[in-house]
Amino acid sequence: MNYSLISGLAGGLGLFLLGMNLMIDGLRLAAGNTLRDILSRSTATPLRGIFTGVLITSLVQSSGAVTVATLGFVNAGLMNLTQAITVIYGTSIGTTMTGWLVALIGFHLKIQGLALPVIGIGMAMFIAQREQTVGYFGKALAGLGIFFLGISVLKQSMAGVVTGFNLSSISHNGFLSLLLYLGIGLLMTISMQSSSASIAIIITSFSSGIVPLDTAATMVIGANVGSTSTDLLATIGATPNVKRVAAAHIVFNLITGMVALLILPLLLFFIRDLRSDPPEILALFHTIFNILGVLLLWPLTGWLVRRLGKFFRTTEETEGKPRYLDHTLASTPVLAMHALAKELSRIGDITYQMAKNAISSKKSAHSDLGQERQNVERLVMAVGDFSAWMSRQNLPQELDVVLPNALRVSRYYSEMAELAEMVEAGQLKITPLDDEVLTTRISHYKTRVIQLLKLADVEKTTLSVEECSRQLQDTEAEYQLLKASLLRAGAQGRMSVRLVVDNLDILSNIRRMAQQSEKAIHYLATLEQYNIPDVASREKNADNQSVSVS
Image (cartoon, rainbow, N blue to C red; front, side, top):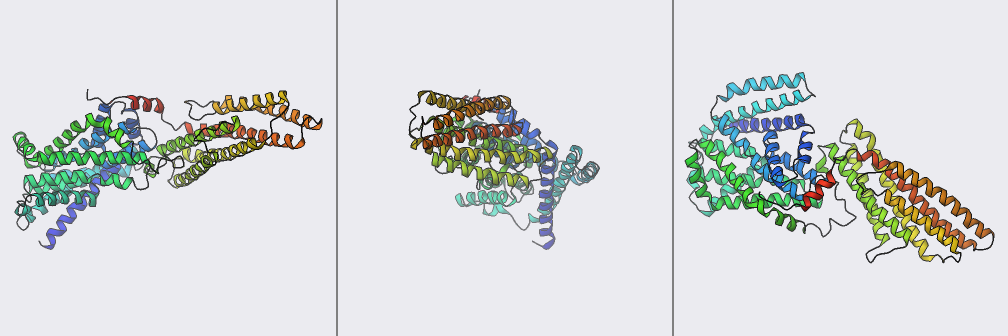
């Protein structure tokens, strides 16, 4: 194999990958929030989830990009595990569209005559409207032209490879050959991080006569399995939800690959009767075995979700670990803000429960305010780190303005957790009052504060900032009257000074908790506008919905 042949193969592959990256990047930017909107609204049923995965992957020509976006949605709480798995099913079918592009256009048209004008038109659009949707479409169009140009160079180079290198000579070693070709397809996808690129190269190799059909089909199966490497990279340091989705994708691709290998001769025999053109045979094979995989796994989705729900729980899902904060959301700042609001809501839920238990002196068998406070502090630190990371992501102006409010909310929750621990400690050591009237009034004040905490509960579907402010004013007035009564009782000798001070310390800390909760709800409301409407109800409905093939 001479230098010109090697340089031709390397150049063709480089052009192909460059075109793929430009096309994917351009389509993703042109789509803008469309991807987010489609994913958030079109996964209510398993069938819609599959069609959504097929549609989006076909449009952006990257199953990896759609998979990473899906991981981000699961992590942000916008999609549950069942919905995400059905989207993954769809991406496996949608990614086969690249093979059809290569088979139907790359081998039936004069590519060079088509590619050069497409590149020129695309770049003209990009230069004229660089930061606009038209410009992004132009970038994608130029990428498509370079993609086809790469195929043209690869075809020419592959023709020179045939005489000196033919894998069919080692295709009769049984199981070892099978493993070899699987490994080649797998490594191609892992090294290029694109199963579409691997499939295109395999189709070109088969059409040029370098590899026979059964060998090429086995390599396609390996490339398909290798696409899960994107998931594995995305799960490094990720949350349990992301790991479960990635595991589901790996399980799906492995089972699909094993089934395709078992019935490989039957599939190829069937496909030869449908198509005679070599590129189309391989493209059809890729599509059919992925569809068979979806049909096989779809009825088992409910079981798979239940099984995966039992994994990744030992350390990751303790209360002190964030559930929604994940750096896979980098490409979609609105999703990152939504995840931040969800994590703050979770911290608020823990904190309010601590406060109510401390005020009412209720302590369940599993209650440990000291441990819960440590959990809150760890979560607050995670929110701070995530906020700092977000601030470095070139946020849109409207997000950059409200991001500091997340830090304010987390600080208020941290102070509430500390105050709850102090209130509990104070109430454990205080001597009960002999004055029945004051005891009743203190109890009434505590009840009013607990009502305020319930009103400010961030797990509610709506946040009533105005009502919380009015309730705080009422509790503030009641506190001042109660404080005056306690001081009067101490001055008149009806209560010891020590007892007055202890009660005032407790009531003061309860008052501060009420103030912090009102501040938290005020600033949290500025973040709630970035939540996707009806997310909670959709998640609940999807969780309760049984998976059906009808």
